[in-house]
Image (cartoon, rainbow, N blue to C red):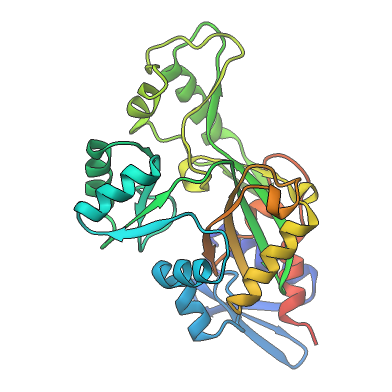
Length: 328
């Protein structure tokens, strides 16, 4: 290659393709969004981990959160109550009163931008909606599901990996302030590398300082407080890698009935490759007792954290993805 591959996802696909004797090159030189793969007489063009078999309608429905949430809810899949809003009126206030705490998040962006959790009152709703409207045409107001955040990776309509995305946190040492501890953690994140197919890679984004004061205030803490030794506090409440969450492999912990329901949902949407974000109280329990709620369906799932989780077993998902693309 005559130029440096910047995207770690593309790097993984290129390196695994070499191991599997699959020819690979960028469809357009220097443009990492599209990769051309060849094996024998078969040629496949991919865009990240989107399935080449994804139909336009299935893709459009999952991209449109209104359509996707509505269809899932109408067909008895567990979706927390939601409405869409561009301003605060009677309907929005009634929704807040009935379902608080709620989540306020963008309709048409990703990467964890402007997701506001634990919205409890009118002032918090106004502030959250104003911030969301900076990045999105509309906001989703949704009942906040309980439990931990998980990402299910589905390839060839099979669950191939499950991550627990733990919220960012620090542990007290009895000496330093919370702000100091966040600074130490972020320095560690900047300097710690994971070797991804011989490429040293930063796997964690820094914990955002912005908004931490408000988050801590809800638990009667301040950035200037000295955290007692051994006490762990979470500095976010969203299991998104772009907000600093930490990936733990949880694949072997999932109850078979939950995996079965995930595949049923994916088949209903007519998707063969997907990332399913859920909140669940206990993934070891049967589906009906687990407190399982669907948060979002993504047809552009990342393979990276499943193969290189910070904690737990690595899952060989890149190979499974490529095997599926060239399956007879």
